[in-house]
Image (cartoon, rainbow, N blue to C red; front, side, top):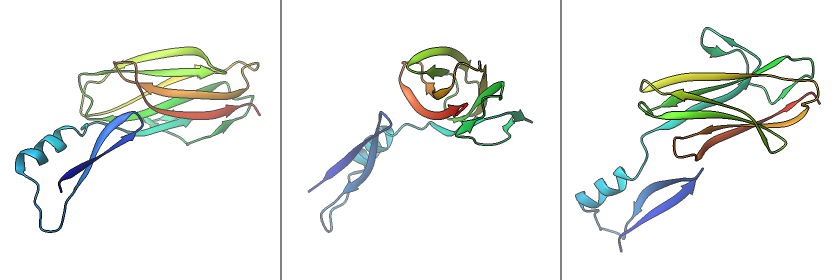
Length: 145
């Protein structure tokens, strides 16, 4: 019996390997359809950092001290040329900033930053949002606690 497994992961429909009965082969056209359903793009890295040096994050943090004046969100995108993505900064369920980027190459590194106020302590959620408004990946960090 031929069957293709589908997995919903991070809001993306991904084709898994076909499940075959012993001795059964997948028709060439079916394999091509399954391969075409798999997105060819990815968020290779999504890092909250205290700084950027030479277009790379200086560290990968889950928490920043209250005296840290700024946080950065670094992402490396692959296979998304021609698309637009947004970095969304949320604090306590409220969108505090959205920064848009046009992706102009097959491997594209971008970052945004936010000046942090002492009263903005607690959990922040940083998301990469695609052109359709779907969250591709999110990272949380704690500020000032």
